[in-house]
Image (tube, rainbow, N blue to C red; front, top):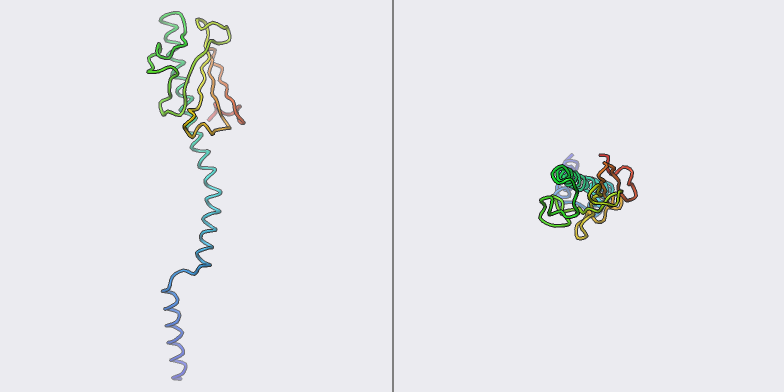
Length: 158
C-alpha cells in the first residue's frame, strides 16, 4: 500500500514538473504550420480587399473632375485640358488619397470644346500600381465608364 502511495505521488510530481516546462518543439512547429496555413489563405483576400477599397479613390476623383468639367461647360461653353482651370493644384490632378493621377484628353469628337475623356492612372510609387485586375479607369463626357485590366468589365461595379 505504501508502495502504491509513493508511486502515485511520483507520478503526480512528474506530471506537474513536465507541465511546467513549457511547449515541446513539436507543439511549437504545429502551431507555426497552422498559423502559416491561415496566413496563406487570409493574406491574398485581405490584399485584394484593400486594393478594391483604393479603387474607389480613382472613381470618386474621376466623378469629381467630371462634375467640375460640366460646371466649366455651363460657365464657359467649353471643357478644359488643364486641371488647374478646374481648381486643382496641379495638372495632372492627384486623387484625394494619393493613389491615382487624373488627366484629361479631348474626347470622341476630337475637340476639347465639345467632349473629354478622363483617365485615372495609379501612381507608380504607390502599391496600387500593382493592381492588375483594374489597372486604369476612364470616364468620358458622354458618361461612358471603362477600365483596363484582367477584370476590366467589373471594375466600376462595387
